[in-house]
Amino acid sequence: MTTTATKYAATGALTGLALGDALGFPTEFDDVPSILAKYGPWRETALPDPARVTDDTQMTLALGKGLRTATDRGVLTPEGMTEPVRREFIAWNRSPENNRAPGTTCLRACDLLERPDRPWQDASQIHSKGCGANMRVAPLGLVPGLSDEQRAGAAQLQAALTHGHPTALAASDLTAHAVRLLAQGAEPTGLVGLLRSYAYDHRTRYHERWLGDLWTRAEDPTPERFIARGWDECLATLDRLQEAVRTVSPETDPCLAVGQGWIAEEAMAAGLLCFLLFVDEPLTALRRAACTSGDSDSVACLAGAFAGAHLGADAWPADWADRVEYRGDLLALGALWDA
Image (spheres, rainbow, N blue to C red):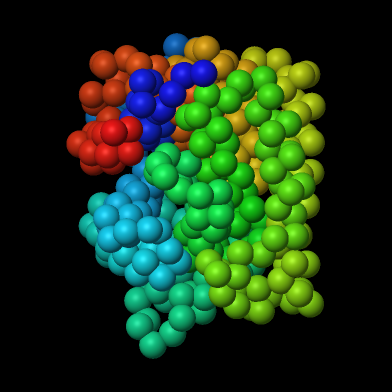
């Protein structure tokens, strides 16, 4: 097994996420024929110059910086995490660099998070399961020293600050778990099975310590019924992913098999499918993800996070990695968590 310390999984995952984001930024709202007409064969796609990223990388960095502040103060707790992450999300929302087609759910929730007189649960968009919940969650698969409960609870909490739908929570938890498994050396061939087992094991576990009374904003009779809705949708998506890994041609748009990625569970599955189709070809995985009919930047950033966690920092050629926007911030967090 390759260890995180020797392969620099955190640096690899964060770099891959940003590279996928930059590669998918120009193609996000186009269908595959339009992408091919504009950019040529998908296997030859070049990194844009400049390699600008979207809100996906910006919010990943916001979460990462909030987690760094929280863990600098000691053991990660809900109370210790919520305020620094909330502040980072608000700062992102106010930033003049927040001009990369951000999601309306994130904007609306971050506006509401500025109200100090109300609990964060009132800001959460309880019916939204957009991919903004989990395109930014990779840091929680990379921060070392967390217990399983801390990692799962924190992954769901960071999602719930903006996207309160139970499927957004479950998909974010699964995404962070997948990043963690790959960083620790799990074999990609068994990854979907491990994720299915994890989903079944957690299907009725509501992390009340981390989520508080969030579930009462929905229409479910109990917190267990609330969270089970999310895990059941994720399990159905994992079923489609498992079939797609066996049957889909690499030349076929992955979004046709597992969904376009605008919602959390589909973004997770599409990113995983692109990674699993090209486990040892990380740039090809990113190029495939960027040439899709769906939310190309989010799908590609997740594919990059999975590939980088699995292969480490050396997965990415220097002439790509050195050019991506926010390189210094990405390296700083990667070095901290790889140490």
